[in-house]
Image (cartoon, rainbow, N blue to C red; front, side, top):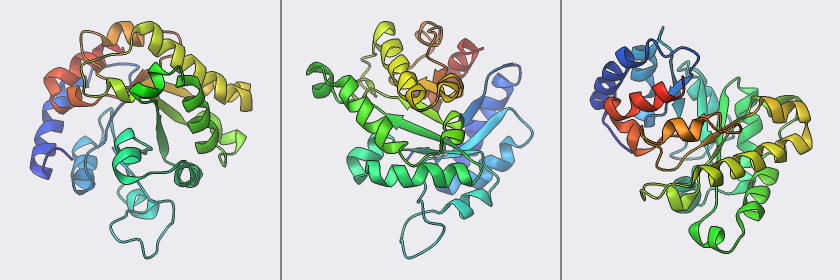
Length: 239
C-alpha cells in the first residue's frame, strides 16, 4: 500500500531509463489497484510488465471490496501476485482460496506469482519442508498438469521479510530446489519450466549471489523496489 497514482507514475518514469538495456530480464511491478491503469499506459512498449497484488477467483458477484479477473484483464496487465505472506497473515488468505485462484488466473491468460514460505518459528522447529510441501501441494491442487509450467512460485521466508535478516544463499537455494522438486513430482517437464523466485530482504549487494544459484530464477523484491535507485541494481544483477 505504497504510492499514490501520481507517485507511482513518477516512479515508473524514473525506472524505465534504468532498465531499457536489461536484456534477458523480465521486470514486473505490482502497484496498488488504483495505479494499475496508469502504470500499464506508462509502461506500454517497454520491458516492464504490470502485475496486480491480488484478485478474486470469481468472475463477478457480491464480493464487496474485491477485484475480478475480467476487470484486471480489461486493463491489459500481465499477471497477478497471490498468497503473499501479508495476505495470508492479515487477511486470512487460505490455501483453499489459492487453489481456486491459480487455475482461474491461468485460464484468464495471466501469469500467477504464488508466494509460499515459513515463519521463524517453523524454520527454527525444522518444519520448513513440511510447510512448503503443504502450501505447494494444496495451492496447486487444481492446476492442470499442462499449466503447471506456466506458474511462478516465490519462496519468501516470512522471517526474512523487511527484517534485514536474509536467508543464507544455501538456505534460499535449498528451499527453492525443494519447491521445484515438488512441482516436478507432478510433472518433470513443469519442474524444468516453472520459475522459482526468492523474496526476503533482497538488495543490490546480495542479489547477484542469490540469483546465481541454480534453482533461483529471479527475485520477489519488497522494500528495495520502492525506489528506482535501489531497484535498478537488482535488475542489473539478474542480467
